[in-house]
Image (cartoon, rainbow, N blue to C red; front, top):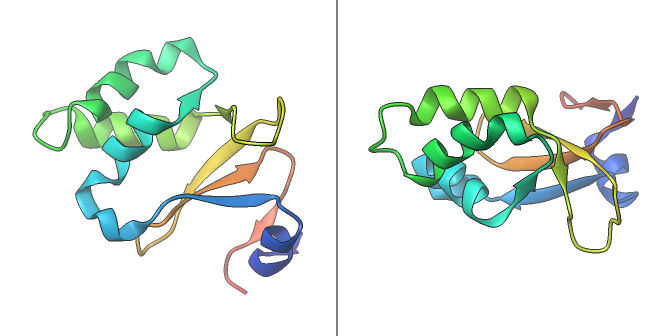
Length: 103
């Protein structure tokens, strides 16, 4: 298991959306990044609609729990899981990397 700093230095973790976007983090993610699962299309569309959509937060939870992000610049076919910190920052974490977020 790696620390966050080790994983970042090795390129295993990438910041996707800064938490300063607040309630618009899910919408920003949905507009600018792609996921590999077609079954998440409805959730992605709900997030793209913005926080006024009644399904926004449930859809975001679905995306956070199930999405595999692909097509990040310079990563080839590498798949990433999503992790959102308490401060709202959204990270992509390489699929096979375990991180101790507490250190």
